[in-house]
Amino acid sequence: MLAKRMMCAATSASPLIGLGFNPTPFCMNSPEKKPWYSYPIMWLIVAIPLSAVFVGSYLMYLSIVTFDGLVEDDYYQKGKDINLDLARDDFAAEKGIQANITISAETGVVSVALTAAKEYAFPDPLGLAFLHPTQSNQDRKLLLQRGPDGRYFAELNKPLKDGRWYARVSEPNWRLQKRFVWPETKALELRP
Figure 1 (cartoon, rainbow, N blue to C red):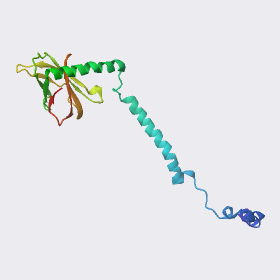
Figure 2 (figure 1 turned 45 degrees about the vertical axis):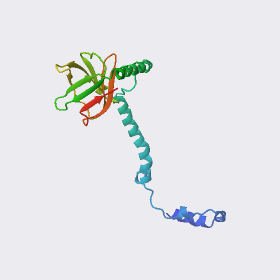
Figure 3 (figure 1 turned 180 degrees about the vertical axis):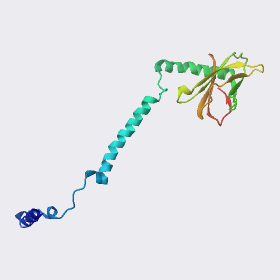
Figure 4 (figure 1 turned 90 degrees about the vertical axis):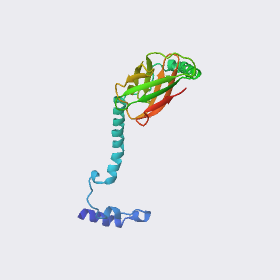
């Protein structure tokens, strides 16, 4: 400590004072140095990159575990098939085909009543699909059988998850499709 005071006394008489050198910060009795982890700013500096590592690791985990069903293997052929789908919609509009779908939440029974403005023989069985907009593994495809009253019936093997869905009634020549929200919508009317 005596050496520190002597150094402070020697520097106070130094000719560097006139050049703007101020030795007083070196000569003050400063408290002992604290370790780096006791400064809050250091934790902020460490926390930002550390949080980026944690968030990046979590997003990597999500990308590995979840399935992205939106990417088609043969996207070019799917793009060409859109024109065929539009022709099926036009055929349904030309014949005036309509479908009324009723879904029972308690029993899981789905019934479809088909009507046509022009003469048309409906197939037996009939295809019905409930398509999830983003998760293709949630899609439900049913084969409906015609009952004695002319309506088509089938039972859902798994219940629909809450949210938005597409209902599609189709056969090779035509199709009808409509978006709905489950469980708010229990009866649908599909028109071309």
